[in-house]
Each structure stands twice: as C-alpha cells, then as structure tokens.
Image: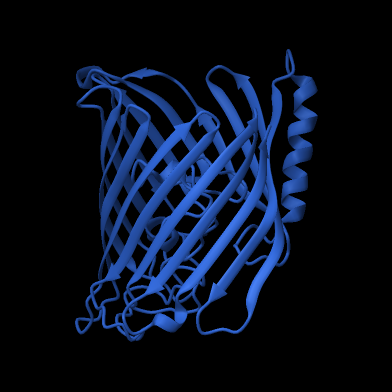
Length: 367
C-alpha cells in the first residue's frame, strides 16, 4: 500500500507542471494528545499519547474535472483505532457536468468515482475519519461504528460510483453503487451494494429531513472485513438549528440476513445529539444505542452480523450497547482547537463487566 501511495503521489506531482497553470493543492489535518480507557473487568488502565494525520492532494484539471487523494497516517499501535502506519483513506475522480435533468426540474451536479463515503444518512459525511473531525465529536456514534465493522474513528466507505441530483426547493438526492461494506473491498462475492439518499428542507434552511436506503450482499467466507451478511437498511434523520442550539438524530432499521431461519437478524440503532457554541467554546452531548433483534444479553445469539466489537469494551455478539458522549471543543485560533471528550459504553444487563469509560483530550489542526 505504501508503494501505491508513493506512485500516485509522484504521478500527481509530475503532471502538475504539464498543466497551463498549477492546479494542485495540499491540505489536511492532524491531531495529537492523551487517551485513557478503563474497562470494568480489567485491572489494566490504558493511558497513552496518540497521534494521527491526513494529507489530502487535490488536482483540478478544469472546473468540471477534479481528482483527490487522501492519505491517512497513524501510530502502528494505538488504542483508539487510527490508521496503522500509512494507509490510503480515500481516492476520488470527480466530474461536475451540471446536466439538466429535464422533467425532474433540477440538475445532475456531480459524478464521483473511487473510494468514498457511502451516502447512508445525512450524518454520513459528519463521521470522524482518522484525524479529520467534521463534527463536534471525536468518536463516532454506535450506528456508524457498527457499519464500519466496529471502527470508532473511521467513516462508512466503499469503492464505487456516486451521483448527486439537486432539485427544486432545496432537494438533494445521492445514489451510489459500490463493492461492499469495507472501503477496500474487491467484491469477491460478486454482489454490488446500493445506497440511495434524499434530503429536503421543508421548513427553511435551518431544518433538514432525510431518508436513506441501503442494500448490499456482503456475505462471503472469503472476506475477513466488512459486515458478513446480506444487509438491508433504512434510516430516517433530522437536523435543525434553533437560535444557538443544534439538534439532530436518526433511527436506523437494519436487517442482516444470515440465511438461517432460526435466528432473528434485525437490529435497530437510535442516535440523538445537541450542541451549542458560545464564542470559541462548543459544548455537545450525544446518546446512541444499538440493539440487535436476537438480544439475550449473552453475546451468542444471531449470526446475522459477523461478530463485531461494537464500542470500546472487549465483547462481541448480540449484546445491546449504549454510548453516551460529552464533548467540549475550544478554538484557540483559526484551524487550531483543543478537543476533549468523555465516552461511556455500557453493555446490557448481563454484561456490566465490559462497561468502558474513555477520556480523550487532543489538540488538532487543519490546514
């Protein structure tokens, strides 16, 4: 993977001088700080300094054609789940044709090819991806952590093609076909995934309502990553601003078919959050809960989902998980912030020993 990144980087640097004028830009983000994790049943208290970074190379050939390369960097050993060494976070070739959609009364504004965020829910692009933190929270909620095979600082991504349609009255529709639920999946099972998302602003620009549909058959013995199931999902979400407060949330209905009639393969995820900014201080709270349909609290129920460690506790299976987050972000100057977050994960009535508390404090910069 390192050789691939080097080759792509060299190609982008070499083609820049061939253009009529320089069109290559470099941006990114970095964070570093202290993380603390304490699981109830363990005597070991994990406390360590961690660091991660993203380097983004953008090439603009013209107003209609762009390319982007995102390289993730992290320590080889870290508790939070940042990139292990150097990895390719995402690649994209972007076409912006602004095609008239005719009878639909809008325009097809973008085609995007490559490894990218899957448009399942309006909060999909608000998930932390290595050091890139586009929301007030460092750690992702349980719904997107589940879809990312248990990863807490990785967005839900796949390799495929996405198109965006922008219609009248602030309507946007995104559609994507992709390989599978792992961002680097090579589609060994020959079953493509599909995602469709619609967003509207029925009450003005301050409120966004969304609904999304997801379908991907990712059940295969040959794949060791991603969700090992024939997955279907529907998510309904809302985000609104009232004065200085931002509210939002979603409910996601998932079915992970394992082709076994003796198991219940449904799972529901609920998330709600609130955030307020006071001058250079942003205070936020979030609650998310994951509950599988075959819930017994024993950790050995449905096989619909490949055993995934959801949350920071060292437990897998059909266990109900609750995540509570409290975050305080201080902006010292433009693009430089101090992020503090308290995360509490609890595991069903019979799994108290796995309850985990995390306290994280990072300085971060974007450029």
